[in-house]
Image (cartoon, rainbow, N blue to C red; front, side, top):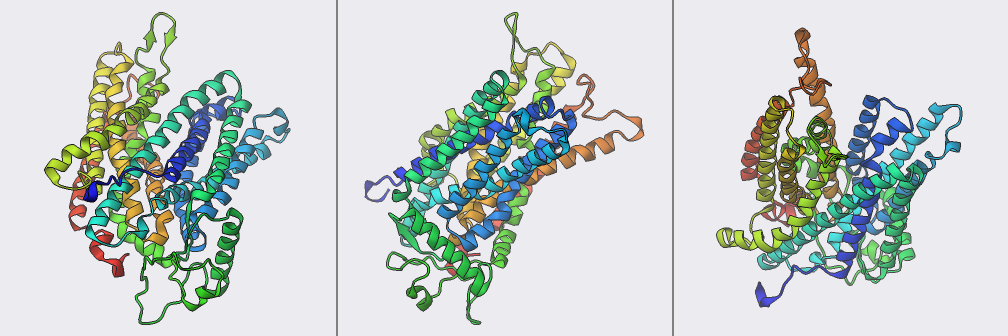
Length: 531
């Protein structure tokens, strides 16, 4: 590194926001991981209805950022979006907690079901604005927009951003592991009221911690104004004035452009001398905004890579569904009394991520730098591709283990560990790479949209997984044959399903490799062709 400096050290605001992200994941996973049990045992839904409800809710939650992000980028700053969306988030959690009390269930239970449904929708809406904005806001604290556009500083920015997203995912996984393990125990032993109240209070505490760090944050407004050591109430007011002004004067995020200026010309200006939105100086020098059509253009440019990641997202759904079904039929005894709950093996994914994530930056990157002579060891696209390869290997192992299980019913549940661990390692490569890729490949004013594109992969992947299961059931049961997913696990053919996923993912990987050869990053396109 030039001058012997280490640009990979994260500043205090970044570290605080990583902790806050972990707290949010604790709250969300504390609800989502055991929600299907609550719906069947307390709401008295059927198993299929509960599973469909949870899958649909998770899909909606993952896709919601894609719908909310364009408005957040066009009208408001990340800081204000986080505070406003957190109110919806907390209101949804509090409403869901209220459904655990007997007085919340009158004679007309359909009304109560509708109330619970809208509670879940409020959580999805709140998270749709909160999660991508929080992550983009955390990356904003790196201060990279102040760097000069030289090749050396580009490498430094990219390297620091890689470290941020790596540790961000580490924090998220830590919160998820604690949420799944602690809250499942509380809900099963101490009751659902406390089981949902704790995530609600943790979310409130995370917003309080976020507010405590207000003075240390750097806020970038929708019109590119950057403010440090800001007043939170003034920031909210300025963001609101900006939103009203943009809607009233020129529509949602539609900037005033001259006819001879390219439709989307992005300028990353030095803004320290400019004043906040609403001052006279803004009228003297109009800022470039982001319109809905601009969001569409950026999304279309990234659509090919986005599409090739969908099958990885389908594989991502397997641990919580069919891997668990496999474990139910295998020997799970430890001693004479204790049986391992199959769902706990999902923790192997998170544990492998937590243990191996630090090694990526400490060991893998320095080793690969020797061969690639790249500052980051491997590029973001190569990182995602490596994770896709590992996910395919995991599915091959899952298919082989399932074939062995069908032949040997006495197989122990620990045979499933390799496929769980491999998926955890693949997450370190692909999921972290996706976060950095979609954040870095969108203009500065559309960073929330970039994070939303990343989360939407898993939302669409969730729906795609359900659709694939329906299609496979339709074709495999024709002529009176038995479905691959029959309830009798001794006759189910999950191995064929895993082989199918491995084959489809291999084709997806080959297309991905071809697309990578033709893909041009923002730096290749240049500032004037940023999108």
